[in-house]
Every structure is written in C-alpha cells, then in structure tokens.
Length: 451
Image (cartoon, rainbow, N blue to C red; front, top):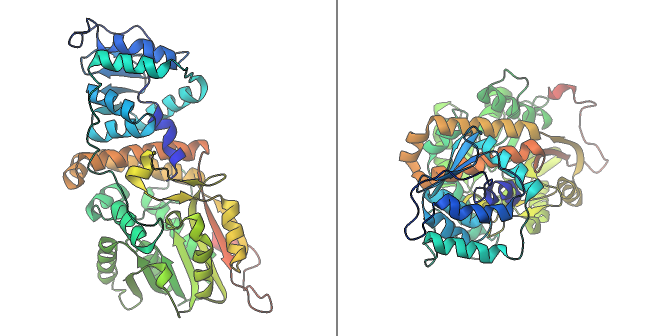
C-alpha cells in the first residue's frame, strides 16, 4: 500500500524498447505508424531493449514478440493522459480506463519493465519537448480528459474520523462479493502464512490467524477477551472464538464488512461469543481486554496519529495483556502521494511506517516489545494467489464492480507482489506486552508454543 509499490510499474507502461517498428497504416495525417512516431521518444528514454512488446491502436508494434506479455496502447488518449499528468498517475488513468492494457503474465511484465527502468532510464532536458511533438503528430494534444470515475478525492482534515471513514468506504465498501472472488472463502484481506510449498491460500490464512492467537497467548488463557481492531469480515474473530473459546469484540469502519461479519458469526453459531461493531477505535473507552489484534489496519492510522493509536490500545489492556500489530512497512516510512496511483485509487491517505518507528511508538506508549517478525515473502505469495483468483473470476468480478475497479485491483496487487518479492516493502508483526507494576509480563520463556 505504499506509493513506491506502484512507482516502478506505473512509470513503465508508457515506455518500450526501440526495436524496428512493425509497419502498419499510419495515423491520420502523419505518414507514419504510431510505433514509428513513438520510437524516437522511446529511444531517448532507454539505452537498450525492453523485453516486452508494445502494440498501438493502429496495429503497429515495437519490441520482441516472444516476451512475457504485451502492453497494448489502444488510443491516443493514453498518450494525452501521460502528458497532462506526467509520471505514474497519467499512466494509471490510461490503464484504469482501458486505453492501455497488459496481456500475459501481469506480475512478470511489470517486473521486467521495473528492472529496465531501474537500470537504463535516461531522461534528458529535451524529452518533454520531444514528447509534445510526438503527441501532436499522434493527435493526442487535446484538452485534459475526464478522470476515471473510480478515482478518490477525499475531503476534510487528513486522518480525521470523518475523512478516515470516507477513505475506508472508498476501499472496502465496493462489494463483499467482489472481495470473495479475490480473497477466496477465508475473506481475509491480509498476508497469509505458508508453512510449506504445498500450503494453499485458505490453509495459509488459517495458519496466520493461529500464529496471531498463539502470540497473543490465547492458547494459554482459554476464554480470553480479545479486541480485533479493523476486524474486516470477521475471520480473525471467528478463528479465535472457534479454536480458543475467546470472547471477541471486532470493530470496523465499513458498514458492508460489519454486516457480512455479523452474518458469518451467526451462521457459525458464535453470536454469543463475538460482537461486531461499526466503530472507530478512537471511540473505545472504559473496556478491558486480555489481548488486542490489529491485522492490516495500521496502514490507515498515519504517523501523526500513531502515538494516540498505541496509547488508546495500551489503556484497553489489562496488566500482562498483549498487542499484536500486523502491518506493511517500508524503510524510512512513506505517505501515499496524491500524484501516485495507489494514493488516488487504492488507499487514499494510507501511510506505511518504518518498523523501527513502530517499535519506538509502542515503547513510548508503555508497551514492552517482545517480538518482531517479517512475513515479506509470504505476502508476495498471498498477492499472487489473489491475482490468480481475480483473473480466474475476471468476467464475474467486472460484472460486479465494473471494469475500472477490477483493473485497479489487478494492477495494484500484481505490482505489490513484485515489491514484496524484491524487498521494496515488507510486512511485520510486532508483539508488545503491557507489563504490570512489578515488571511481570506473563510471557512464555520461548517461542515454541507459537508454532
């Protein structure tokens, strides 16, 4: 959920290698094909060849025909969007509208393009003028085109309760059925834990939930009172109640999530153990829990609110109680830019915080940090499984949420998988304990019971 997740992918579909272009009927009035017009511009961008093929609206093409996939530029509008919003945002708008598409292995195409950009990008001072000239010849110099309908534009003070509810709604309230197509039966929208190569997605999500329960000591204290912050569709709550007899309060800002979570709880016969609330964590007061899980919610909190977040959760725990904070992280931290694909379309106002700052924030709030674990490679595999689910259910997903929204998720998940693979971003579970006045932590001597 980092702007850097998408930067490599989003800056590259506008580029190509400079193989001799395939001849095709020329664009109106130019006497040349689109590929011939674009080739000099691309030659100014790249020093050697990009290992994917680019095909244009007039059927002309550049690049090798035997690469991992093809970038198809269906309309001069794609070029226009890139000129009016240089960088990843313009390319994103072209992709979301379908003016630019990627055929083939999405993750591999984006990875190949990212590798070339990182090594060979050479942007000169004459490039903008060259781009304008090329766009004029292609008929792409019209006024700005309307933004795609699914682009977010939140209002109000960043990370206020009202604005947070708005951006959460933008991301999560699109369709419970759509998320089922992507996530599978577990309805778990966070990193899974694959114990070996044969582990499937559902078993891996179950393994992740069980790891969290054991880190929180639910196996040591049957019937514990658990708070699940950002409970989603209730999967963590259901696991804790089923396997560890926990009584659970789950809170979410998404009304559709809460509705489905309550239904799942009722169908499981666990409505006596699990309460799902439509509630902001900042409104939790005067309750006491044995343990708190926060899985994939922290990215919405923001660095400025981190201290209040951890202090609020610390106050809700009994002495000896534990907090497990599971969140995506990036070295140095990163805030979703308004000029980024992910900031406009996926996680408006999202922030990734350096795991070192997370540890410091927990300690300042009074927690003793007892364990930090990275699941980076597991998230890459999780995302590839989600991409496969979406591709398998593509027509149904498009019918449910529309082609623009489906394209957003396809691009976001494929590029994010690459970023977890190459270490550009990571995901960490940080375990903290609220020690008693005498320093008693009630922690086990070793990790053996965590599995």
